[in-house]
Structure formats: structure tokens, C-alpha cells
Image 1 (tube, rainbow, N blue to C red):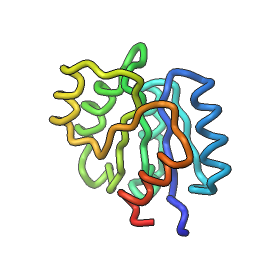
Image 2 (cartoon, one colour):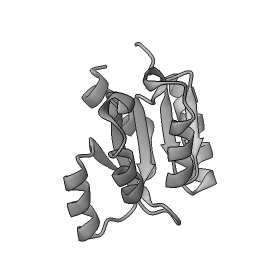
Image 3 (spheres, rainbow, N blue to C red):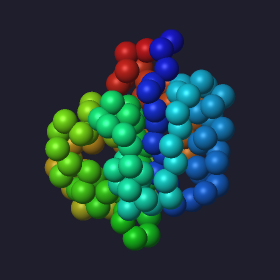
Length: 133
């Protein structure tokens, strides 16, 4: 199985990030795992990458975060030039969803919605659906 170029985890919960990092490392999905604890930090991290080829292949994004939440991150991310965004797959992670949030996510064209917590099976499903593994 070919590894993803990189994966970006965006969640304000450091415990979730730690557990998700362990899960990704155990599955050997990528050698480059990036972690941000909020939307603004994630945008800043992406902005510091050397070029479009370095953009994450997969972003797992929490919906409810203080400061810049997942939807606000998506709105800002989608403003970046297409050439800079690569073919990044964006999966929203959530525990609960407001109907307004679901409707906004439809408008922003995310690639999927997954309930927390992440599991081996959920990651394998994401890989199978979006990376033909």
C-alpha cells in the first residue's frame, strides 16, 4: 500500500490529536503527520509549506473548535488558489452536528463526514473511498 504524502489532523483536543497520531502511526498511512490545534494554526501551517506538492493529501478537520472552527477554516482554505490546494481530501470529524452546519458543509463540498472517535476501520474506509486502497 502506497503511503499518503502527508496527513493534517486539526482538532483543539490535544488528547484526540495524540490518540489519532498513534493510530495513524500504527497503520503506517504516512511518514508525514502534521497536527494543528485550531483552524487558524492549520492555515498558518499550510501557508508555511514549501509548495503545492507539500500540501496534505488528507485533512481530518474537527467541526467545533474555539477561535476559527472547522467551517471557518474551510471557507478560508477554499479561497486559496486551486493550484495551491492540490487534490486534498477533507474529512470533517464531529460528535454532533447542527442542521445549519450540515447545510453549510454541503455548500463547501467536503469529501466526507466521520463521527468521532477515529478508528482503524474508519481510516481504512476513508483510504478505500478516496485513495483507492
